[in-house]
Length: 320
Ligand code: MRU
Image (cartoon, rainbow, N blue to C red; front, top):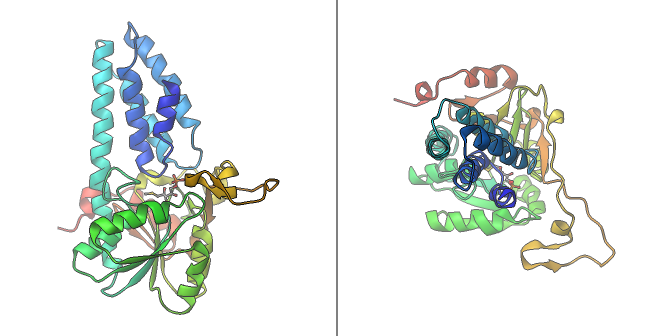
């Protein structure tokens, strides 16, 4: 059971909170506990397994904490607790969709008709419950009738860009081309890209953003060519307990992902080769133009303006 729950959160991103929540609901549904107390203990064990699975994406802990808080409320029976877990997980999932829709509406204003946008990793419906974060903004701009063209970073080593983002853009009818991650600098320097968008796995109080490895290099190249860089994430991705991004734990994954084409199980490096595989990197706030959340867009100084957005009630940010 613990192994099954662990697998459910392999795919990170803000959906990781909802996935973890359904993982706990699954644990409750499969429990043979004869009392509420016994089931609450089982849920704590499952929660610990989930929390240990991916250290960078903060939504995991956010989702688990919310579910454990719900599980400690007054409930009459194990069956009642199980239903409570299912309902809370569904609530988290429903909220994720509304939050992403808010962000898409707010962020779409940043994209001009005719823009070519470089997008990194996958941040769409396949990475969230629906709509997505950065890709949701691009999708909304397209739906608003803006002619948007996307340069899709393939996003080695797990290829979330060429496997997932490309597929989503196909579904939405948004024109795109896949580029190798290293080619982004060329398109930025030659003026062939006007904006950069990516998501976030954890954001520190000063606006530093941890996201899929390669985001930092992309932001550096964009900055040195005067191209704006936006990170899009729900406020549940902000960790105000961390003053700066150097405090964010960066997951290091198995070297096999780099030494081969993981999905083909095909090794490309020499038999004796070894690799380093940080799954995320840190983009310092100094390289970011704006942070798009469901409560609005934060511009520098991020420490002040992000904290202000964290205090905003989402509905008040929605354009009437
Ligand atoms: O290792 P992954 O696939 O979990 O990494 C995902 C990312 O880094 C995404 O860019 C980020 O989580 C935002 S997804 C809405």
